[in-house]
Amino acid sequence: MPRVDDAEIDLLLGPVALALLGAGADSARLAAALTGDGISLSAERAARVLDRLARLGLARVLGDEDGHPRFVATSLGQRVVDAQVARQPELAVGLDELERLRTDLLSTIAHELRTPLTSLRTCVGLLLDPALRPSDDERQRLIATIARSSDRMYQLVEELLDLARYRAGKVSLERRRFDARALARDAASAVRPLAEAAGQELRLDLPPAPAMVSGDRRRLEQALLNLLSNAHKFSSPGGEIGFAVARQGDEMTWTVEDHGPGIAPEDQARLFERFFVGASDVAGGTGLGLPTALAIAQAHGGRIEVDSRLGRGSRFSLVVPADVGGDPA
Image 1 (cartoon, helix red, strand yellow):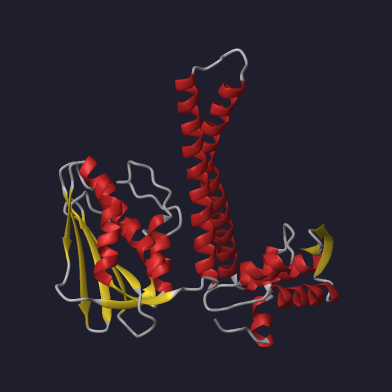
Image 2 (image 1 turned 60 degrees about the vertical axis):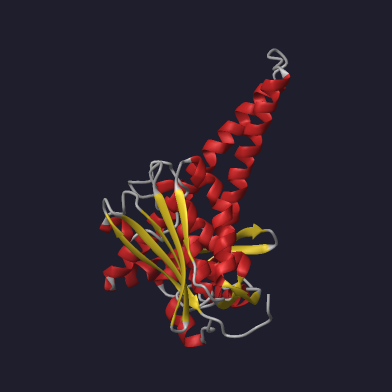
C-alpha cells in the first residue's frame, strides 16, 4: 500500500479531516478514518498533521485519552469546512453518507450483540437467583445457552477484527503449496453433517489429477466454509449442493452451487457489504461471511464471482492464482 506524500496530505486535510474532528479524534482515529482506497496514513503522520492544524488555529486539544491528545475543530476550522462545502456541495453529500454509514454500522453491531447478550444475562440471572434453585438438568441447559451466546459474540468480534485486518493489509498469509482437491474434501467434510441432517446431498466434482495451488490453506478453507454454509442454509431440505474444483489457465477455482431461491439483482450489488442481509435470508445471518470470504480471496490476489437467478439458485466461485511455487504442504 503506497504512502501518501505532503501534497496528498494537504488535499486530504481539507474539509474531510476537519469534519472528522467535529466530535473529537486522536491521531490513531484520524489515521484510520483517512486510510483506504490505496492510501495509508500512519498514526505518527496523522499526529504531525493534527499539530499543524492546531498551529494554524483550525483545531485545538480537547483532552487526553489513553495518553494521546484528542483534537476538535475550532470555530475557524468549522468555518473552513463550511466554506469548502459551500464551494463543493458534493462534499456535504459525502460527509452525510459517511456519517450515515457509521451510524448504521454501530446500530447493526449493537443489534447483533444484543440478542446473545440478553440471552447470556437472562441465564446468569436464573442461575444466581436463590429463589429458583434450578435442577441439575436445567442448570446444564442454562450453561449450554451461555456457552452458545458467548461463542456467537466472540465469533462476531473475531469476524469484525478479521475484516479490519484484511482491509488494513495487516494479515500475513502463511503460503504453502497444497492440493486444491484436498482442501475441497476437508471443507466438504466439515459441512456434510449439516447437509445430511437436512437431507441435502453434497456432491463433490474433483479433477482426477493433483491440482496444486499456493496460498494460506487455513484462510482459504475459512472462505470456502462460508460459501458452503450459505449454500446449505439457502438449499431446501432434500436439495443438492454442488462443490467443484477446476484449474482454468493460471487460476484455480472452487465453485459452490445451490438450487435455492436465488438472489435478487438489487441484492447482488450489496452482497459483499458488511452486515448486509438479503430478503431471502430468513435464518438471520450476521452478513459477515461473504465480506470475509471476499477479503480472503483478495488477499490472495483473487476474487469471488457470483451467478444467481431468482428461483434457480446461486453459484459462487472462489478464484485465486494457481500454483506459483513455495514450500510443499
